[in-house]
Image (cartoon, rainbow, N blue to C red; front, side, top):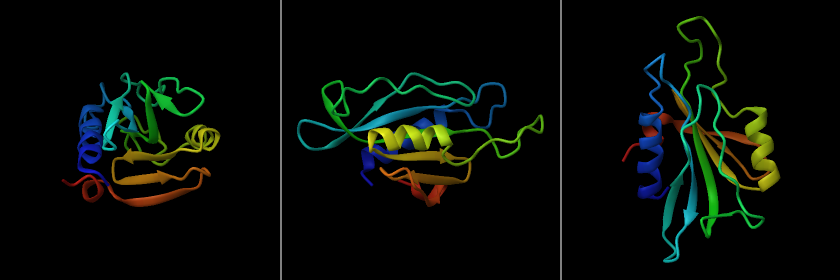
Length: 135
């Protein structure tokens, strides 16, 4: 994966404050193709504890006049939090539907793993978070 993209995914994980039970929240972004054919990231507005709303894409899956090639967001909640509540670590059904409708590849970054959502909405494990996001 591209170094710029990996750095932004890692930054999103750090900014989601997974270790702070009172402030953990989802972060995400679009992976875009820049005019010079390099990859870039267009980050989204901060999400909530267990949701984030991607900005609207145009009909050609473009955002800010750039082609979106993939998407990522964090799932910062632990499998079982401090109050005993269980949290989904991998992509949710809502995540799968969103990717299936738009036919876009995506990544969900959780406490221990990075999941990949394929354009047909199937899910696979990309690897351990600390290894996948390593510089």
